[in-house]
Image (cartoon, rainbow, N blue to C red):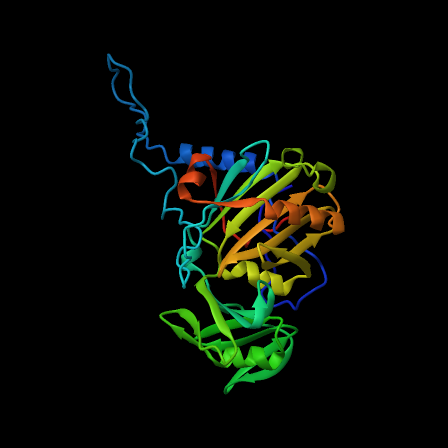
Length: 340
């Protein structure tokens, strides 16, 4: 099973089909293989010498430079990079206390996230993660179906829970569980400054976070179900994660979710798919998403209760703690791949 992140289509209305943000055990091997390929591909070399014989062996490749980066391109950015307001403290991972092992660390890295769309997460009165709010994204693909509406004087399209409209020579999208009139109002109060969206929230609404749509980083820890004492309820694979970016909440509004109770006093949501997988997510700080999930059991009440127990046992890791775990780095576009 490929171990990647689920992402919905830009112009579809919300569907009852359940999807999940999960971690599959197979990606560790895939990530390690990808890193090995990158390392070999980055090794500098010189072509073989085809001239007269030499008394000494011909060196056909140069050893790698100790200062050469393991991956080409920009660095892998920390969780929450570029987000405004900035996180009150760096968060690099989520550990389950009283586990039999330290867990296997995976650092999903999207080195191109900052060059993609940007988002503004807006919440209404009493709103929380995936509830009572909306996500504005620019640029975005326009809806090809739905109803014709006006955003100011611009011709726009609206479907269930989503509105798209032209702005700054491209298109923007607002998606949420608000009324259509509120979504249109947020669209009308959206501006594009230096290629990035900003929203002047109406009375009673709050801008929670602004930043790249795709998360620059997503840090995960994997455990065996037996290692955390929940094998019977959750099966052989359990994982935790922390991430940022509007993509996660945008998909909460696009997919079916259920109430997940609270974690550390914060409202949580549960996402699930048929076949035995689910993720419980909450917001420990504005704009930061934390989650605990599993693969291998039925996503029913027993699984939700077990995930809630694990969530209450989690502890935030700082950067030094995370690096001490020796995370495997997997380069990918977070939120754009699909899980089966």
